[in-house]
Structures are given as structure tokens and as C-alpha cells.
Length: 138
Image (tube, rainbow, N blue to C red; front, side):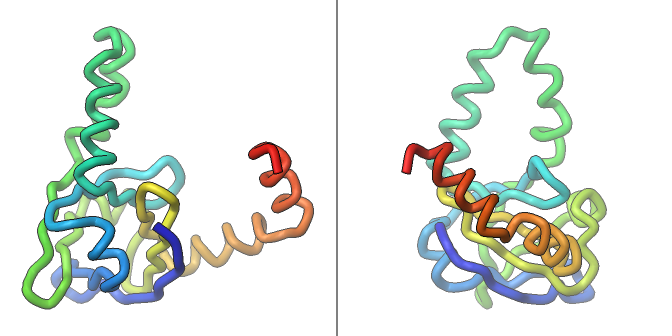
């Protein structure tokens, strides 16, 4: 998944998912807390790989993942291409109204517009891009 899309969450907590991402996410997908101050959207195939890895962890390690699974939401789009973002997840990611949806390889991320702008300003430098490409072996 790739691209950056700017949208707004309505008063009922609904968010429009761009058509390009809807195609890649499929009919059913999962919304969960992201690693940073964002939410992650996983297509079914990625979520399945994720849960398989989780199942292979010893109980002592898997208990740290409880909040992720306890707050994850299985999503299906409404007739207008929207999902409802639960209040707990909106609070976790600091989502109020204006958001940015990013394609990030095998998932999408939902950021508050302000948080993404700050992140992008910090990360979008030639030096950081060079370091990223070097880490990938390019």
C-alpha cells in the first residue's frame, strides 16, 4: 500500500477509506493500535500472519500483546466506504477531526493531521532517506 490521503472523521466517528486502499484492504480488515501515535489497518492476510506469530510466542511474552488484541476492531465498510473508529482507538491516536491515512507497505496507518505533519517534517530529510536506503541495501 502506498500514498497519502487527507480526510476527516465525522461526529459519529466514521472515516472514509480511499478507494485505492479499499481495493487493497479487501472486504474485511482489522484496525488496531499502531507502534507510534497512530492506528494501523491490516488486511485479513497480514492480520492472519500477525496472529500466527503471536500464537507461537510463549505466554510470558504474549501477555504484553493483550492491549493490542483487546482493542482491535474487525472492520467492514458501510455503503459509503466508511468505517467507524472506536472511541478508545481515537483517543489512543489523538484523532479528532482531520486525519491522514498513509499506505505503509502491507498496512495503512491513520494519523492525526497535526501529528503526521510534525512526524513528516522530522523524518523527511535527504539524510534520513539516504540512511533508510542504505539500511535496505540500496
